[in-house]
Figure 1 (tube, rainbow, N blue to C red):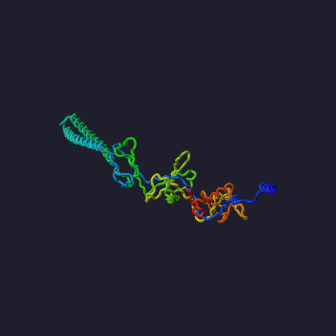
Figure 2: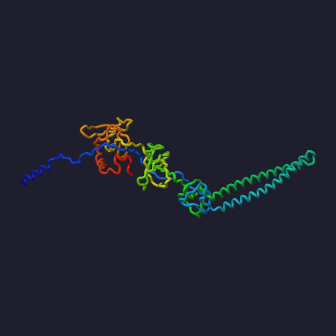
Figure 3: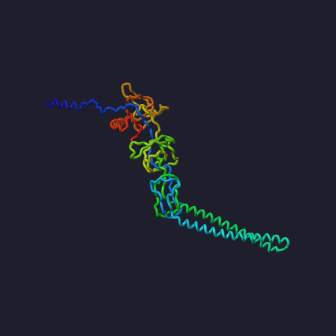
Length: 386
């Protein structure tokens, strides 16, 4: 009996089994009907579309800031006051110097008038030999000298008037007004601080119009050629939940930024912000929409085999797939839109067809079935998960 049991156990151990479990069977990919969206993703930062850094054009102590951060201001409203006493004193000195020169000018004009009268009288007397030629020449010299002095005084007055205008302008710069309507979003100087405008323009505060914000997205050079102005785009922000902001591309800046040897191009996107939910400096996850389709045949991206460039057509890129079933075999399918999970089938397969994944693609399809994520093939699979 012991020998019989031992023989049966040895037979079972040595004999291979042909039974296969469900886990050993290849995971088949099924063509389903759903929505798809192909996008280019990028990171972006929010900033006001229109803003201005308000600075000081004159040197002096900042006496008063009339507004606070968050205040709405109108164009022409007084924002800050710099100590005006030095500039007021310069204006007073210029005005006094001008008055002094004007008094000298009036006296010199009187002398010039007297010299002209003497010159005219001597010229008439010279005809009748009533005066000598030397006396006539002396009166002529005196007249020309008086006229030259008058011209010099007038030039000095013009020069001082120009200096006065400049000093009055600087005096006006001690009061800083808003150049546009907006919101005070930043304060860079404090009351009592001395501002030095001789070398650089000291910034006092920043005004911005917050009704329209701009997202400055950085797009890799491999993707930027697929974008164009007026392209549809949407984005999300941290903490925004399910909310998406819809917008269009305004501009693609031609000069790139190179960060750690990575070439990135700035793409500007304007978005309405009248509800003031978007703030300066927020991070945005951008999705530039290259194309989308609704209720079209979809196949998991990892179920596609090798690309067949000989059969590429206007319908899309061509791939070879192995159809499962007794009537199956290798087929060429035309693929249109695609994302990280699915591809649009434009020709070659129908909804319900099952495809055997290529080598290396089975495990990925199994994992997708175990964890489909928040989006299934019938629920806009074109939206990547953040």
